[in-house]
Image (cartoon, rainbow, N blue to C red):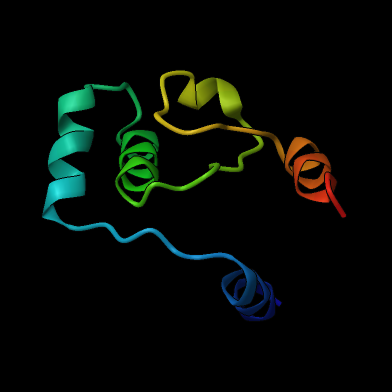
Length: 80
């Protein structure tokens, strides 16, 4: 199940890389949750349009838009 879901996601969306540069940016953010900082730093470095999460409050200072899944669906549906 998880493998199928992951395959479906990566067949539609790009995956932001995490490398030394991204980790250093995440460390500089000094967020309480390092995983959130890494996610935001990777999204910013990859110039992502959005970072979809159920907890947008954890990423208030993200460099990219942070919609919830329902908001992302509505956003992606615009123009169809």
